[in-house]
Amino acid sequence: MAAVPVPVRDAAPRPVPGRRTLLGYLLLPRPGDLVKALLMPAGFVLGALAAGGVDRDAVLRAVVAWIALELLVYPARYQWNDVRGFVADQHHPGERGRLPGPLDRVRAHVTASCAVALARLAAVAGLGLLLPGLHLGGVLTAITVGVFGIAVVYEALRAGTGRTGQVPPAPRPRLVALWIVVGAGYALRGMTGLVLAAGAHPAALVASAVTLWAFGGAFVTSRWALEATAFARIENGRLVWTARAEQAREHLLALVRWLPTRTAATDPAGWAALRERTPVTAPWNLALVLAGAAAGPAGRLLTGPAPVAQAVLAGVLGGAGAGAVVLLPRWRMAIVLAGAVVQWWVFDAEWAPRPVAAVLPWLAVLGAFLVFAGQRPETIGTGMRHVRTAAAAMLAPLAHAVVGEATWDALRGGGLRESR
Image (cartoon, rainbow, N blue to C red; front, side):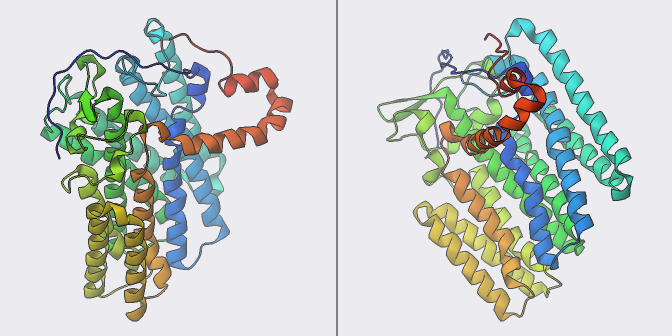
């Protein structure tokens, strides 16, 4: 059932348990988004399996490119986004993990962030010069241009999404375009790994790019819909939305029309809204079906040439399986497993090379959807927090010896706190 507009009242900010330090932010702007860093290695592994293996030089090139992409280029891009949205983020009712405030330190914090972002981009150029034997100059240039090319389009669309306190706002063409563009970065990440693993037929690359782009759209729009619940409260089992124009969250709030209007939960932060059935027309559902339909032929074509009829059949099976996941949320796990078995059986019966590897892209896309469809707003990013905590515990003895205990505690966020 679609959400309906309700009267809007000013929101009181929710308690913030602990704000990030400026130093911690500059070191790692978006720790909650580290899960996206899995896309490039996942693409590389899938490409390697489909190609039957890779050599050591290919692995080394991929590792260096991955470091440049996830620790240098994308953090710089995130910093640009956070600088542009600094004021609106300070009005957000929850802790977003963006560039820390307070508002009266805007000049100093924005200047520091811009300086570090430029240093990161200079380091990307330095990698190509320091490691000439890997011939990564073209790859690193393409990655940087691609990331910031997508960013320019995104920021232009984002700047024109308007400011409104209406919930939900109408899904205007610019908003829809923004929801489509957000998947491009996922395609760039995954395709970088795939191309570095092995060359592939153009049809396989096109199908893979569509798969990754659509998957990214499904992931982002569903996550944005969950993040929008920060602007809601639950009264008598019904969602009541509250937003202010200066919070500039139209691109999130327009998605709530596809969320259920009633829930048995008592706190939106603990509500796993996407575990329930949502309309087929929801952007994340449409994107998921497209990703599933493209993943079938992508997997088959990556393992080798295929007859057109076989690639089309793979697309039909992949799209049908994804559609069933959308329509039957209670049976999602069983549907994904059954869909993978059916596709493997068809590939094997058609004498396709490496049928297991051919099924993996579809299984990876639908498996990832099962994970993020079960998220609640309060659990977004918690998995990566556990990983970071474990890594910090293992690195602590060495870090204490190298930089000192006080500095290490500051880097982990234990010191240098900024007032809100």
